Image (cartoon, rainbow, N blue to C red; front, side):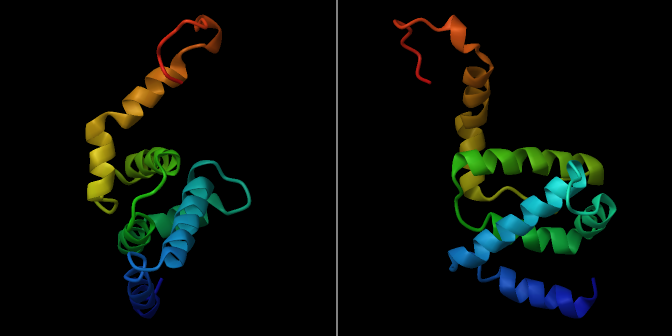
Length: 132
């Protein structure tokens, strides 16, 4: 991607904090690239990887995607994609965690949901006090 297009992405991505439509479009774009790079599908895996390997572009897309707090379920799937992309790149530096995300991490939100999610439903009885 040339510098002119990166500059346009930067201008547009800066609006994501104030414009939810812009954020959601960047979020969709990130998810499509991540899915294409990790799972394949409709998009060229190599093309998605090439775009994600452009760390300047990745930083802009990530920043816009996470500009405002997301539903924890959506953030959870982004967390998985972030880990996969960081493993491929050898760094998570282009995808810094925003403050709202850090609070989810610190609260143990995903650890709790993984623990509950890993329990088999047939092991719960009707008198079990633990929440779903």
